[in-house]
Image (cartoon, rainbow, N blue to C red; front, top):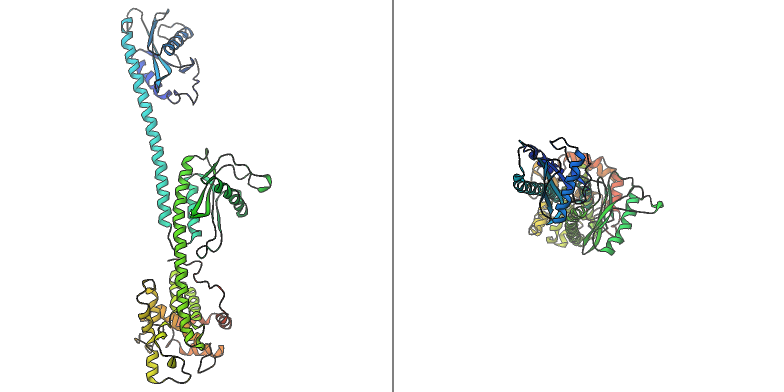
Length: 519
């Protein structure tokens, strides 16, 4: 029996199943099928003729007929010297003969077919071969379509998961980590590397992340990124390298065999994404397309993050400037708003509040006295005891602060803390005389921070109190004036160290937005 020798490059490759099915179908009709390529090699081997004659001789005649079909490019038939009829038709691919289908049927007395049937059998064979080819092509197209749809679905699913997790106010580091984890799954790769260059204020320093099971450390991942970066800049398009080589001393030559890289761009290069070592096969254009799509999403998020950070930086700069205008009216309260804001944030953090809520409380502390812009300086800076009328004027400043800020939508969440920072749990505060838990948490936090800084600061009418007196006074006034839980948190701190920290000079650049700030 002749072995099948069709190579994967032959147009007949993959058709063995279809032609084998045809062989069974023709066998039921008493016809013996064999398939030959243009080199005369059996793709579907010849089987013994029903006459019982030597298989090798029939095989040779079938091969000879197949050769004639290839030479003439049209159906051929002949009568065998062994009492059989052979009929062959060309197998076409793109109008080119790529093989031959040959059937054999015997002609002895009482046989199922006669020589007169040969022409009909040729037509039948030609039609069946065309049918099986069409079915094979359709199956191939369906398989390719299914594969393409599956890949597209995975790509869309990845993009959806990616975009649903990415927030303008989210942290670039976490966003980049999510991207790399998803790439490991969808691209079926051993490792992924992401690099985003520093872009203050949103990204104060370079972010370099490594994901997967690569035999690399972060330094080596950085070396790989630095090696790829100039290549990306020079090529100005994604890089695909299925035969990566690196110097022995780099530590990369054993860990990295293949890579695909795309740049991250926001008007200028800001980083890159790297896929390393395909688990099966090689990287191809589909991988480049997928990685580029993810890079485009990441670029949008990073650009929006930068714009948001710039706006947030501008907002906090404006808030600091506003608070400075209040402090400028009274030299004795210089830095008071900043210190209240810092202590308010510290208390909120100790309470375990979210980063977003903590930032709002910090802003409320920064602007808690903004309403004092409307208080005359002779009242605000009076060294002695205030008259009742002057005190009523002072008591207006929480409400004035709310009116000043009420037109700024972004500051709506902090107004409650400003309006209520002089309320007391026993109802003795102002402006509304609220009791207990009716006072918003923001107001209770800022109120405690306000009084603490006032007691530990020099004022026009007195010197700063000693720390132990401050502690005693806060304990004495709890829970009438202060929230008991907040007092416990405050007094658990190292008070002398806290006072020293709050008194420290402003740094050249204030940390306006905490690193973990999200909304």
